[in-house]
Amino acid sequence: MNNDISEVLFNEAQIEEAANRLGKQITKDYEGQKPLVLSVLKGAYLWTADVIRKIDLYVDLEFIKISSYHGGVSSSNEIALVTDVQSDVKGRDILILEDIVDTGQSLQFLEDLLLSRGANSVRVATLLDKKEGRKVDIKADYVGFDVRNEFVVGYGLDYKGLYRNLPYVGILKQEIYS
Ligand SMILES: O=P(O)(O)OC[C@H]1O[C@H](OP(=O)(O)OP(=O)(O)O)[C@H](O)[C@@H]1O
Ligand code: HPA
Image (cartoon, rainbow, N blue to C red):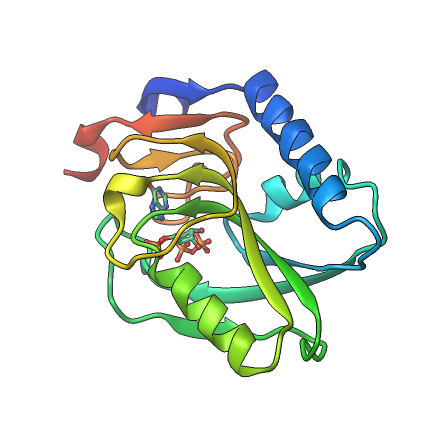
């Protein structure tokens, strides 16, 4: 599996540093609040586990699953809600945890959904921000790392369901998906 990676972009130590940095900032910004942390499955599960332990606040934790890429590398405009949250988001301050914001369409879909349900505020903390990939005008509030416009895998991010268990984020060799 490691042989399929052409370049490691962010190793375990760098990711831990990012989780620390964002956790501290989130703890400061949400002081006195009890945010609802919303982890976007499947990609954000490792990032969620790491960041949430760096947040020194009372938080609720919820999961949501949407689909957009259907296992390939090309994006689809169609976003579908696959598994919904279990609790009422009305009046809540929601912190979405994402592994990557790329076209921004997933985040846009989630923000629209949560605000239409009466969320008080919606912010996002993403491990990776691929700004060059944007198709909609949306910004991430907390960013671990900017990433260039290449298809990346590992640490939750997949290609056709694989590579999520790599402990680092890397670039998948082009020959794997071309
Ligand atoms: O900004 P966008 O272009 O919308 O891309 C970002 C989304 O794509 C990935 O999810 P994916 O749909 O691949 O599902 P997964 O998390 O189950 O891998 C990723 O986890 C984000 O949720
Ligand atoms: O670069 C990526 N890799 C894996 N999943 C993704 N979803 C959006 N962009 C990516």
